[in-house]
Image (cartoon, rainbow, N blue to C red; front, side, top):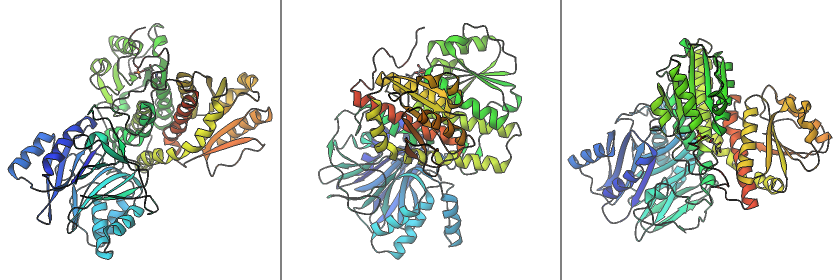
Length: 604
Ligand code: M6R
């Protein structure tokens, strides 16, 4: 996840930018840069690699300024080179960005046709060119900025310097967070409270779609429509601890909201966004005969979602098993099997033992883990990292979607390597994955309706989750989330299995949550929902607005964004997590540390 800092004040800005960037190192990065207004001109210093390389550049060519922006870049579009490092510059405009501009290729083509010359491969540079163009038409930088923001599709946090606008920094957020820091005669923008932590504890959290202008004396904030917005100043903890709850009540809530970033960060490990391709890694899937995934809990459900993708996209047989069963069952595995351990912590005892056993059988092994120095990461032949960042809530959320994102991307790679996916389909699937961070951010808009549903769920003693295809493991994950933190009994079922037993549970007191994207099995799920409604069971159908109403009355709907079926498990994970979260909040349970549970189960 890229880090952003902006400082406008009266003292030296650049040492502050560097101090802040060092605090953002935990987000992971491969290049860094700063820009500052020096005697009315914007100058940049950038370096590939660590911040010490940037400091060396600055030592050779110092920047003396009282206003500047800084960035740590985690490469998505274009290799980690100095030319691709932020800030990016076009004419009077210099800016830094976290996120993905999905329509950058169209915008770039348009700008190139108008004569703009680009110097990087990044999606970000189009924003600088667009804004520079608009500044030529509108006198007011905020008017020009709003015009540009309205043309962008994707997820972003931006901080912008403009030549001729001394003291001014513009900022905007959609999908990626951005905070305003309030100092004495000095103002800041940062990608999180930690970024501005060394300078101030007074923070305003920008809301989705907000944009802002800061100068030495304060901030003018606007909502997505351009109307003035008042975002309260809150006092954050003076501690510079790596993980803080910030504006959120619980770590789980914070981690749910971090998912546009954590999914993007993870996908960039496996996809080449510039060329619309799936990256090839150490493992050549053309040489693999079968995949055996082992995992526990939420990671097991992520693995099951991965199975649908590996089999459908790559024709690669894939089994998924709970590690505590696998390790004692003496499974019969053939030599061409790739054993994959999926785990947030990389330390879960049963998963680790299963991985070790597979390795001892002479199988190829891979570990899909969030803790990259963990035992599984060291044990496996290949490390497949997820980049969710530290997950504090015991109930896994962002680690789960990071696992799913990585598995979907790897399944595309497998499909290409096994000759099952042609270049056009590869482009379509990569584009679909590319949209996931924005659609995850849009899914947060379901929060209001889900709070109402959660109010009712909190009174239930049993809840059913239903889905078909990849929504079936997600239904089980939804049930697990609800059980874990709200202590309500819940079960996840394949919707088609209902008639074979679970339908006997249906009565007026047992709500059913149906995960129903508009895919090739939507109609079948809809008819299962009619069967429940006909028996008096309350049904909450999470489906896109355009999905037809199942015949029969009494089905409550929650509108999800439209999405490609490949990424539906990522998008529908959000309502599932929010439902569990708000039900637990309603019940007043200990959301982040539910009873009887540990974050990492390192004993049997
Ligand atoms: O660290 P791991 O991913 O290996 O952990 C596996 C499970 O213990 C974990 O997913 C557990 O089910 C979570 N509490 C789910 O929210």
